[in-house]
Image (cartoon, rainbow, N blue to C red; front, side, top):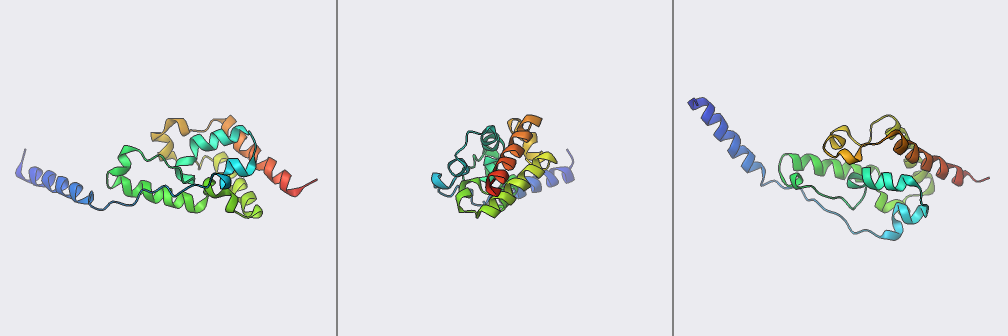
Length: 154
């Protein structure tokens, strides 16, 4: 191995080790189960199982942090995605959303799973069980339609 290659490799190892010092906070805020999607909707819809399996890690306060979420720079990306996901939609705080906001979030969720935007492709690539089948998409959209119909009344 040439001197330039050894120096480049050594520099890369030192930089990777130095990156480990910058550790974003991986937090799961407390959950009030009475505010969760399941408690508020109080339904046994198959969509709830789909949401738990495919959406929970980024869109709830009940994230399962994989081992590689401890390794920079991957940890930075994962924490950023979870923080952004929770800001967009947090199923753990469903009860804190206004009814109109809930309807919009469910409608948007349906649109995004129909268009294949959610779950994120890179996430589904690593987490195979989160991939949505056509039946999963229909379950999520069915829940959205059911809630829209319920809120608009007879």
